Length: 113
Image (cartoon, rainbow, N blue to C red; front, top):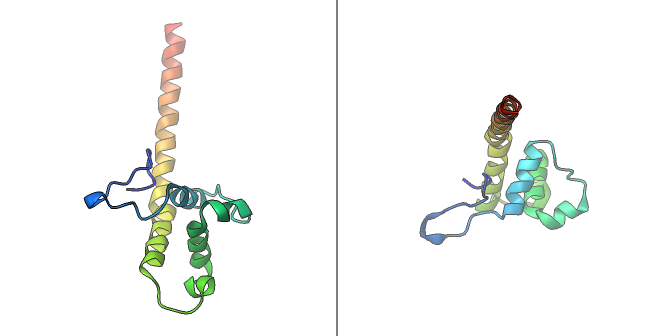
């Protein structure tokens, strides 16, 4: 799945991933409350992510005008949902495990000294 360590997404037949690494990173950062969406630089780095964030709050028609939801908009919306609901929890758990392992390693180093 895109957005995990290594940032590689393997799709059948060598198809490119649906989103850039910058888009995935921005959605992850938003879900983790680490992204300042008011920063104009973020629009240059990950415009699709910021459109999806806006659409999540105001709807796609408010972002791009009238019309039916496109396949790309649906993908972006669903990716945002994943990052907010599942991805954030997974990243938090990984951080907890890493902290536990770091503490255990530090304890072993102290014992070895």
